[in-house]
Every structure is written in C-alpha cells, then in structure tokens.
Length: 119
Image 1 (cartoon, rainbow, N blue to C red):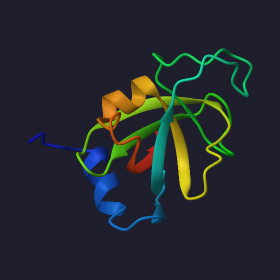
Image 2: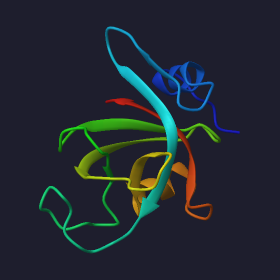
Image 3: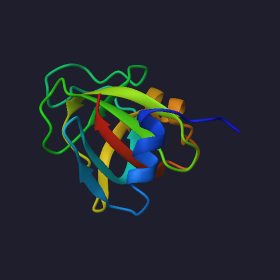
Image 4: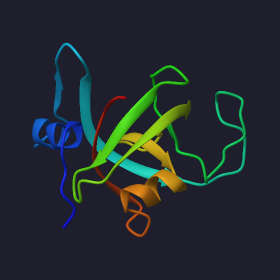
C-alpha cells in the first residue's frame, strides 16, 4: 500500500464526504467526481488537446491554473493544468486527460472520487 503524506493526506482527510469543501489561508479544497477524456480537438483555451499531457477541464477556473488532484480511493496525486472547459456531465467537477487519469489509477473505471486544491 502506498503511504501518503503532506497535502495528499490533508486533502483526503478534509474531504471525507463527497462534495465537501473547505478552505484555509493557503488553499481551497474541493471534492467530487472526476472522469477522463482523450480527444485530439482544440480545447477552450485554443491549444490542441494532448491526451499525454497532464491537463484538465474545469467549468470556471482560469486557464493555466495548476491543481493538485488526489484520488480518494487510492491516495495517488498528480498536478494538472487547466486548459479546457467542462465537464458537462451532471455531478462531475473535473475532466482529466488520459495521462492524468493514468497517474491517478482510474483509466479502467473511467471516473473516480477526487479532491483538488490549487498547487
């Protein structure tokens, strides 16, 4: 089993329930469901979608925002950059590139519970 430390552990502990949010002086934490996508079209920011890059789509965060995303099921984390808008599926808070989903260990399931905080 992989041990977590630092922000990863704090994020999981702070988001023990789905949809939980908390904030402190250093970061705002949001939890919810995430999925992944691997298109080759242009993103909302104008760059071409690269499934091998560590990127993500969020409905409102500014392009270029970096987020540390933690998979609540296995504790794995990855830092992604927002470069697209979405997700457009009800109940989801983040769409991740295939590479980010692979790092988080949820390619097969297609979606998972995550917590995210500004990196």
